[in-house]
Length: 199
Image (cartoon, rainbow, N blue to C red; front, side):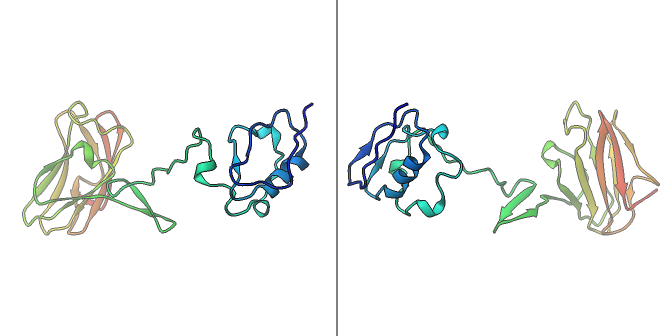
């Protein structure tokens, strides 16, 4: 088995070209401990089999040992998708904050695909109807939830388009101003409405 020979010091521009079949963790530790800020490191020289879990610790790495220029081109750092203002959640200042998009309406309205997961507010002085469309025209998907709230003084009713079954008790009208209900599609063209309702 080939052994790794490591010099005591490294100078700018000096490289270690290869480490093959090395199981001598002491040598690896010495290499890391003595690598100077100006030394170059061949990113393909050492693989995971060459380094024991305890071989390298933060204390053994000088702050300038690892730089962007010393990382192999095959190493890729990615930033996770943390959501956007139009999504259902945001990650801000280290905290996950629940986020609900709002679609404000002032009269009769038929749900659209982008209403999935949203709060639909109806602010009208007169009576309005929020219609749940047929799945063949707007495929909202089984399990989708949409909240409808009555913000104005005018009555708000929830209805299904022809071919859509909407079940609720005691009825499908939002009871009073500031009443709200959650509409859930429980099967194809079949919805359940839960909330502050009246007949």
